[in-house]
Image (cartoon, rainbow, N blue to C red; front, side, top):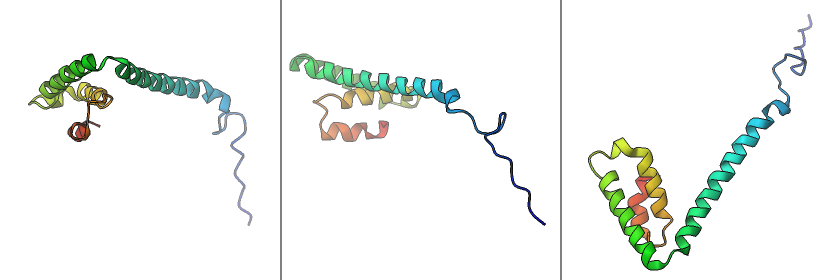
Amino acid sequence: MVAPTPRSTFVKGGLARSWRRDLAGWLLLWTLAAVAFASTLSDRRGLRGMPPGERAVLFQQTWEHFHTLCEGAHAGDFLSRCRDQARFLRDFPECDAACRTRLEPWR
């Protein structure tokens, strides 16, 4: 007895889909990724372009805000905000090894 052979999935209405149907979704996904990457680079360029004194003041204010909000009793209520702040603080040249170690839990 010969086992029946399965039908090809490339028939109309089968399981396989044309790559053209997924193209718009993939283009949207890659566009969003590119925008997010460009935004990150823009923030870094902006920080590096600031005068050192102003950048140090901004770093200190952001650090104090992060400490108050994200290392206090209600830190769990602000997870998304704290992660964003930690990511922003890591971009500062003033954030040394000790700073990065302290921000590590917020990756």
